[in-house]
Length: 577
Image 1: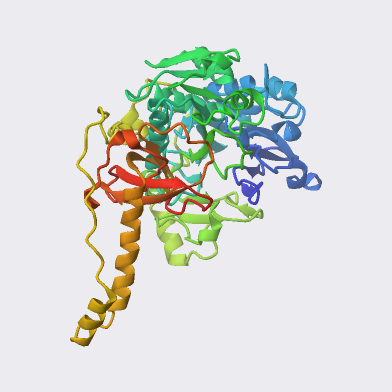
Image 2: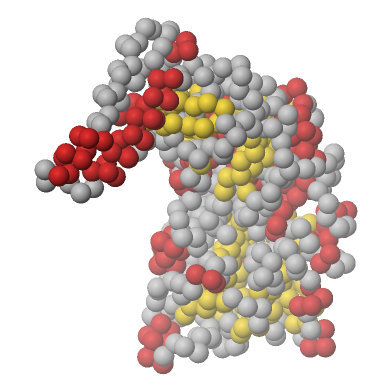
């Protein structure tokens, strides 16, 4: 068996497995995901008898099947779970269908796998839960030679957490794994990013904004199910293909309503709408974006799996948030330790970090290029060249001899399937308490009250006093101190001449903070630049009457409290913001 990455420079989600000796005159090849930049003609060497015998689609994110129409040869089966096959079928048909070559051919050749299925003679495959996204699956392979068999677990993108109601990788799977193929892990845990995305969406809606969430089909189903179960979310409306799939799968959530048809009227103040595609320049989300683009109070939240495409100018806010439900390095180590395979192949999508492979008692291949690597030589699993003989001997000796055991596909334990159950926010990695805290208004609404007058600053010392202090042994930096004091007095005077009002801080993520103004004046305009003077509540005693507010902004304090600001229209950039 040989392994080759199919698109390491354009996504890295695809690879090719070659099985020699299973067919009498040919080498059977299996493509796992048909992602960006994959060209099967460039991968196969037909002079050696290589032919494409099948394609696996692990999940229904578009980047896993976007070149499927170009690579699906006649009568080549395309293996997927029922949910993944249904999502792809819905995405390729009906209004606003995704642009993929030969959609009819893809649907005709799609094979739903819900148990053991023969790939080629001597090789069986079975889907297993891997979390990550609704309907996603890994595949367990049984490779048979007479009565002997070996196992390969293709996990690819995975989580041990629940994802959209689907279970993650089971760490107590009652099967001994010889080899695993996994995707490299991310540096930061994903749970805070998912929680932050839900918090921002709910916060925007709770301030009265119209919120449009754009995502691909699996992510849309995922986030809609989570938002619908958060007490802090308002009405969540799912539209178009996501609504169609929600109905077909029989999902439900307390705050979710569905509209399979294109209904622009579903957009409303304080509401959350979820639609496809992620980049709202076409399709249903493109139509909805056009409706909101001139509304300065509207917010478009794009849930992305990678780098976000820049958007054209609009008056509404457009924000891209990461939704990459992938394992951390600790999770990768936990999964490997649970299965203790002889061999681990890591498709390294973060080669620039140069972190090396996971630390485990296995042969570890960290593959960054598109070369062909032999994983199994017909007799045993191959160790990388850098593994020393003593380590190789130890790893081989600790593996039990399963060559004469009954075949898994005939006499083995029941292998779990990716099946939906009611999502649990904690099991999904969502911290509902954090969401609740983030959207709470730190400054209670109240009627304006008379405030004490602003105290006048003390008079500045004269130059004569300064000279005398220096002559009498005072600090030699008195000039600098006076300059700073005069600057402070000028600032205070501007506050007295102008007006201040209260504002609260909104954390928009990615080190971006927005400032929500209490009763903003009518003179405010979208895109207007203002000069800001920012002070925290505890820093001074300035509390002018609220009814005399003018243009202003705020800057976050260390504890996230409200701030009082003072500003006037200006041609200068807003440096404090």
